Image 1 (cartoon, rainbow, N blue to C red):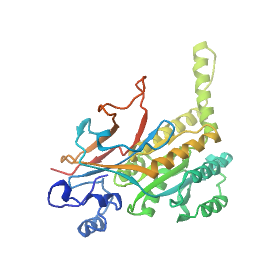
Image 2: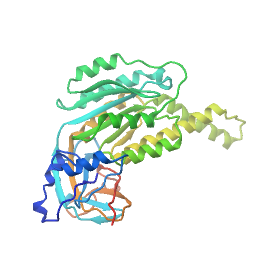
Image 3: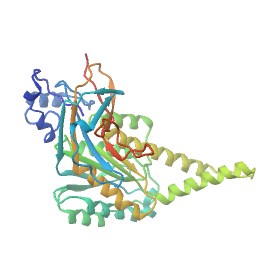
Image 4: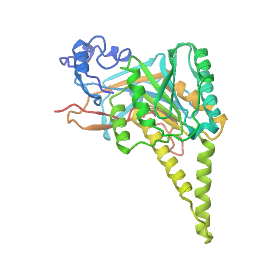
Length: 355
């Protein structure tokens, strides 16, 4: 995220940057910025003229627990691979708004119980002051429950969800875009939890438009892939075809098998990309028991964050960001096998202002 409000340069202590942990881009203290936003005709990638790029980072250990007690010196931010000084740092703990978006298409009608298992597990990990909302989608999104801190209201809404039977299109990308419009400008921590197969029947242009829109939003997406048994069948069928090819056995690959494999492969890539773009994560549960630790991790990532700020480049280009956690010697924290001890959730980058 990049903060957009032009102000004179001053010493670091003169910046009122602390407001960024409580308000979104062009908040209550920046009427000029609000006027600029209302005049915009289309979503634009987040930009900054205050000389600060706002980076929200969640740090979890390998068990999905929040890693607290970190200082500025424990972080390193790479902008297009080059280290940038961290100009602002503060830990943040605040309630979040979580919108649960459930696919109700024919593609998951026979496995829709996974929806309920996933959603109930999510509630167990939420704090009392977190707010939840519910949306379903197939061809288009439908608002079922507005944001509320009443978790029992979500349970009641889930019990009344209707699933479509018969043939129909899946418009995941457009549905996400529509949900972003419903949610409006950011007012704090926001997350979209997708319970979906990830399948989408829209043209590639829809995907490109969604990614551009997400880069203009301050929202994190956690994708939970439903249809574990179907994805398992895909893997098994792929393996059997490979084995048959090695042994010389005659095996005819049907068009339906090929289409299923290609569809789920595309869906998996999309779910991972949505998470990476927004600083979330994609999960691929294989059984009902997998949902509980996944939602524990999502709740931890949302509840606790570190707010960091760096100076942006001024080339009008998109810049990739990498956030690393360092030990007392300034080295990435790893196990003896060189595997990370902690995982960092942060946005993939920002669009720099022009020269």
